[in-house]
Image (cartoon, rainbow, N blue to C red; front, side, top):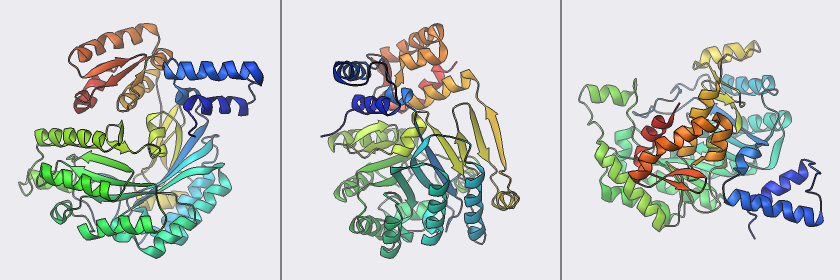
Length: 425
């Protein structure tokens, strides 16, 4: 039987030694009843009340090829990879005081973490376990590209504690993959997922990109159907974005590639939402869909405002009051860590920044903006002003008020960023 959120909150209360009226007998029963009532009515957001867990993100900044659309920090030269692993391990040593919470999620991202040797991943995991209090049931995710996935690697990942894979499939059509300049082909995309399942992985996510110039609506639905046939429990689906300073941006400017069609992207997003609902996927965040029990705990922690440490060049960290980001230069990062210096910049978040970040992230989720938490962040006057501003979106069927939360409708999800910006203070 699944434990509901009120039970989880109640158990955390007991473990935190709050002994007022939550001990035993009728008081415990009443406490659990009240928690359940308030959580269901959204007077309490349990995630916000009980931020007792944190996450670790590890950025591995190397790739085999440069995807034309990517604006993340990476290098296609792997000559610094061994030194990078040692530098990240040393950053762990220097960052143990940044957060004090137990670690419930670990995420190897990039770049392409699956390029690492199994021994390198084991080194980083062992160092992390020796320095941080990692929960026994922590979600540990590794981003992997299909061309890196072999049976021996998968077996090694599983044995060292990797329990979730995020596979960069992007498409099951070769023409799309060539257009994106991906390193794998459609057959590898298909086989890698089967291989992961055969290796004992059941918590698998796959990334898709839609809205590319050559992708028809029919092909988009075929991609999704293939994912369903492969029993993938989590999908991360992103509209192609043309970022500044990318190869794609330059090629479009030189008319060597076709620009994206916003109407086509909107249509494919609507197809995605309809398809996912019919297949039993929860649309729990704008770009993320999961079968029950398979949401990404790590990514959810970002949207819930939990604390996290980012390790590696360009990685970001957040401890509730400050945000910091490491230098986006592999050689300089390694050089500094060799001197026991973490090269980062930092900003102290103002109350307005914290409010706007909450609006942006919460509105992207199925739970929406919790009005009681909003009031706690900003006060009654600003909360009232935001509710008034939201009214016009409610009238346009872009948003709805569900008890004590403001939630986007399916139609409103097409305009999430613009609506959020209108609510900013």
